[in-house]
Image (cartoon, rainbow over all chains, first blue to last red; front, side, top):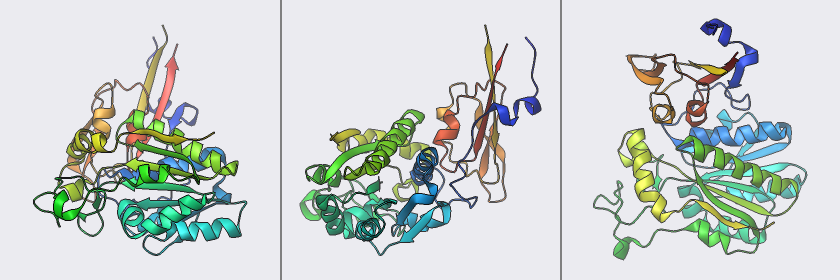
Length: 257
Length: 74
């Protein structure tokens, strides 16, 4: 068998995978190992494959991903804290032929933006909501969020979340699945190659639903927050599998065709 | 039998050394370097020639720093 040198192998005809051009060349501002980067890339790859870069308007949230418009090479609008679904509603109604999506974290979507989220979903706006759930307020220093697990330590629940005094975690994805306006509600993760592929299929399906004017698609991505959880990236992924997934089980919650 | 030969190119200046790619690799090709990049992170590097170009490392890399090449050897 003929040997091949690395220079011969590294030719454009042998290229299998490279970062999509829909992500800018700026270095992502996220911590090492954060699922946000992978989620950004998945969304941009789907837009790239569908060829709708020039027809898509993204709504950036407040939180770690507030600078999403710096990294996503599409038209973006940054919304006030939690108001991304309301802004997306306006954008979609003004430009019904455009693809509109929001990209939100759990503090943005499930805490301050609960009303906007639930009402946008209940109205069945024809948008896509990408929801990154890491169970914590990552940007502000790891405070307890509505999605923090029972007993989980954060900087504002240093002895673990006590359900008796701090309330129960909010499974907002299950809540939204009850609403008649949503067409597709799913929960995915991005910590392994298999999960990344499944998440990509889910995001693709969500944008295909919007193309067919079917209604609101909601994709939750359970992610890690190694800085907020005070772990290494690999430990945080293992902790997520052991603790987050039993409480937030992966899979499709609602599929209406 | 045709054999598949792969290779990855890591943008070491953008790598943050999170190690998420290391368990994703089926052939244990990637390890963290002892050296650091301009930002002070130990970056990922290839340690052997067993790569089959499966792109698992590239699709889990949060920062998208890995480019994958693959060729079928006749």
